[in-house]
Amino acid sequence: VGGCDLQAGGTWLAVDPERRAVATVFTPGVPAPATGGQRTRGHLPLSALSAVSLESDVDLEAYASFALLMVDARRAQWHAWNGSRLRTEPVPAGTHTANIDGLDATAVSPRQARWLPTVSASAPVPFDPGGGPQGRWRGWLDLLSRGLEPERRDALLTRHTGGGRVHGTKSVALLALRKDDIRYDVSERPWDPTSYRAVPLAV
Image (cartoon, rainbow, N blue to C red; front, top):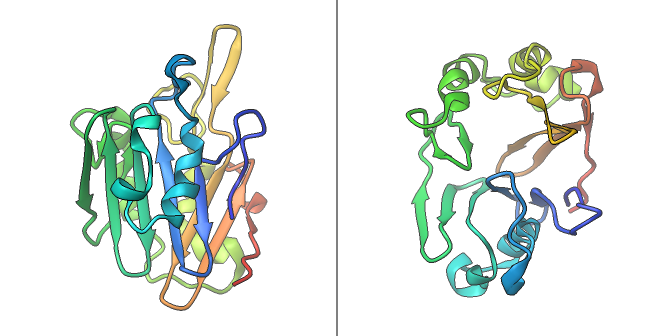
């Protein structure tokens, strides 16, 4: 289950309800070179969820550099591919931030450095699966409602202009994985706390 890039195919995030697993890909924000036959990195979340081993079951050399976060109810793993070597590390329990700069890369990512303390402090813990999206995510929805700051590259929700186009955050997905279920809520207007809706997941 996931979104779909209507131009290139694939998705930035995919959910396997049966395995209770999630994979999300991070890219530098520019398309992969058109030469060399490289595949869209939007295929990676789908391929990763169906693979036993990312390194042996996915043709990594078909992709430009990326980072991939894989999570299930038992563990989380961070994978970083630089075009020639795959680095994998476990993600310990706790609150983390991630983007193409890395996992908890606060030394090199102004966006992570700015938001990690606030995201951690407002985490919906203990998590209440009931009550709909507004009840489940509480502090994070409040944070997102104040997160749109146009032209700030370290904004929680980005929006900036360049090359005659507007670029920025198009949607937000909020997921919680537990041993026996998943909560998956999305919004295309993530600054509006009332806009989040639950995604039905059939197992």
